[in-house]
Length: 358
Image (cartoon, rainbow, N blue to C red; front, side, top):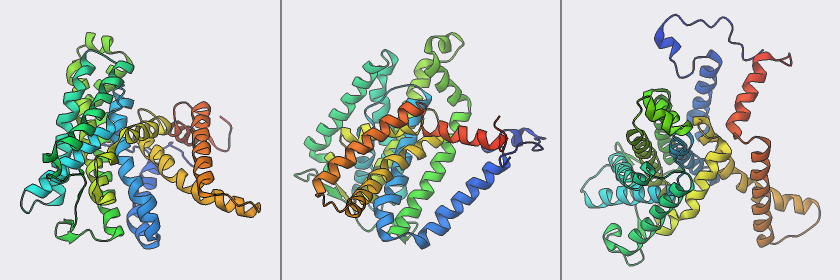
């Protein structure tokens, strides 16, 4: 019974309303943060930072934003790549046009630009839902691709639409190393994840879930569908926009509109579905699955072929990686349709009663 709750009594309302009411959860989260902030920077290599850790942290933030809209409010969106692009180019314009603009306010202002864009393209959710809403948000993706490619003002009149940033600083500290970039992104992720967790546990989060479960019944009991849906689009777009700005500024450094194509939208949606809809933990698990697994397969398949005495080309490795990756996604969805977060919840339930079967 490693996960025992017996004897953990709550004697006040603040204790009863904690984000992590069980002591084991609090210890686990504290240890995880200590490892992420203190141990990882000392033991991880440059390759791990660039290929795994920084992309995972940024994509987990973007998946968190998508999960608020799709998982908690039930509004299907295929425009996440567009929200990331608006956040990235909005932050770039503030950073490049405003003299001495600090990096952190530029990222937040880029998120606000994505918020306005998301609310604008969230207006169809007031009349349509399901696949029709997905098509409407897909229009946002195509519009963003056209806007940043054709309207040269957003890219400071560069012919190809490619822009770049350099000499990034936060509070006077340069972001010139992989460790500093990782810690900066991780700090933002922790803050946004805590804010999102509090949001979904509050009144606005309950409104989102009521709209998701049955919007007509929610309207009957006094919940305003327009406010609930547009607020979900606003919060989700802000988080995705900040993640898009981090993806451009921290991970890419130099980018063009093609970096935020519709493929990015589908990747984020797959992260949320595989990780678990309506779960903050699901965004992290889905991002880990989508980011880490292809890299693992890319390294593992040639090693397995060499042990078998077979030489395979890079193209075969790439195609085999995609086939195995797709098969694993289908297998996970068949085994547990509610995502990896449900498996995590089942594991915790088993630990509550171990060594007994029930």
